[in-house]
Image 1 (cartoon, rainbow, N blue to C red):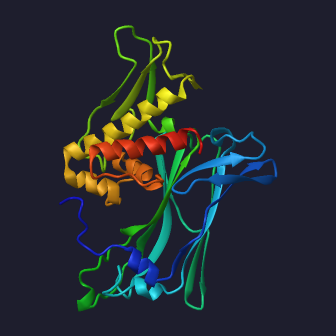
Image 2 (image 1 turned 60 degrees about the horizontal axis):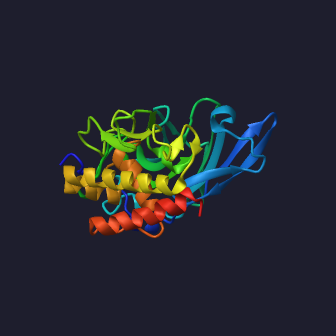
Length: 314
């Protein structure tokens, strides 16, 4: 029951009725007194390309900007919405960096009311050294100011300032490459297999962090055909098979723990930022063709197709 909200949260229908428009992110970085644009590739999981081929997020930082607007924000309020009529909603971006175990939030740089249309503009700069490897950007709607009075019809709505009432969208940035989503440990041990994956300290995958403490993929360079040694990929075909199997094992581990955990992971319900289930939800939503979860054999096949496309940059 802990994964249930006891108050209405945002739905696609409510967002559509409110005329929510999510602008694309713009990404750039600073060199001396000018900003250089970065090209974004991908949809849910985004990789950034630099025309100068010199940018590294840990050395050069990253600036992001975007707009969120609501053409008809009144649909967000009242008994058919998510907040009492006398309250005030706000929009913010929650960011998470798994690699350095960092997180924070970004408030709008400016807000405008254009004849009832609300426009939230975001502009934020991550200084060099603040983030590395990955970045999740989750745009959420929250109760900015509670209502002084709540009507009888609105008693089921949350009225506590600061409480999130739902996610608008989420984007995951991968600054390295797909296989680096896994905490990977290089070993060189004669008596161990070529590779294996270990799961530790799992209690609730919707909350447990996706980190080396919970998941670790071991690659054994004792074998000449080990697909990856340090930063060098020696055998991409074998690496595709290993990463595909690792994703499958994680999905099945979640399913074994609880069918409800698996459903929440796939549907993106009540997942904490940076959690195992949230990372797997990024992957699931970024797959094209879509993953087929009705059976383990179809799940394996569709994971394999997507991993090959991603690792080969197709």
